[in-house]
Image (cartoon, rainbow, N blue to C red):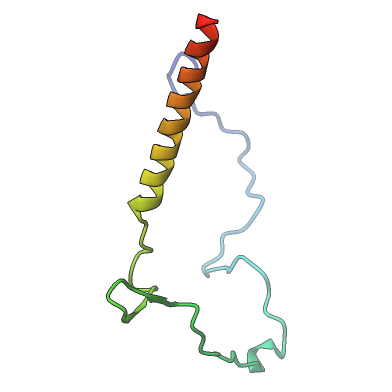
Length: 95
């Protein structure tokens, strides 16, 4: 493109690949004999969580619960640390 204007150029009139009339799958080829294997599903408790009202809830149907309690605790601890450091720096300036 020159100055934002698209220009088209014909590189060659030769067709290098003939068109095909079928869908070609891209990926790994299936290994023979692998289709005979069956998947064994083992039930587990990994998808089960305990909710606040003490009944089991399937976590696959519900988003994970994020609590703001931990965030509030971190904020309070950070604020206390900031105030203590400011207090120490003011005390050093007075000395």
